[in-house]
Image: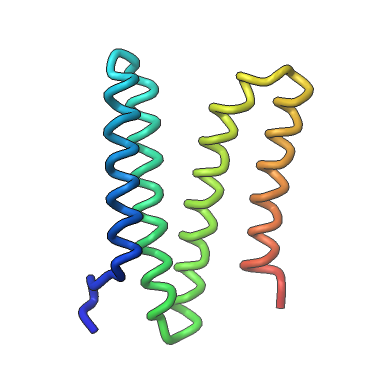
Length: 117
């Protein structure tokens, strides 16, 4: 199996992501922060996909541990990025709940990846 071969569903998913991102960039063309957010989120998602694909193919525990760290870092980054966009739109109490859930998600992922035997 080729190293870069993807399933049809993966290709469709990346196509939808590309179209959605292009529309989001077009809609927020004057706002450099929004364009940067879309591009950074897309880059993180693509890197996450690559790390997960490599994780599935990794044989030894040593290689898998570094990939686990990369996956956790990228998912935590994406969680914080989206929380930073959603929380300001909410009332302060709900924004605090959004950040608390983001922190709980990151902590739960850390526990599941690194502390759970």
